[in-house]
Image (cartoon, rainbow, N blue to C red):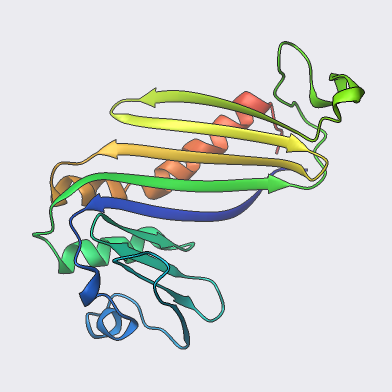
Length: 193
């Protein structure tokens, strides 16, 4: 059974003013229309943190960056960057999470041993394998965790973007990067569709 896509987020590092970000401002700017919002105040220090009541979209903004967690996070972040073209930015990152409760495929090994092969006296619970890859100017970290709960594969894409235009170009590659994740899962875990 193939891994299921669980979640994604886009992170933009830069000099953001968190005090302009609110559900109302996002709606006025035609960035995001909210129906109901749950506010979490004081969680991010000097920033704001809120999400849709259904949990499908989450916003975190502080003086050092913007994070949007959503299936369409790229579209939302692009709209923010278009409305705030003079915001100094330094990097864009994407996070993608895939999982499966019952995994019968290839698992990462520690010293040639899978989790089930480790000495029982140590009560092994979880095995994590991490690899770092580079595709052109993008750094990709892939972490694979296996255990009794199944398998989780996390991807973190990181690209330096010293201008807003470069940040927007990077965000437009969100879909390509998600496809890159599935290709890496197929090749590294030998998953068959």
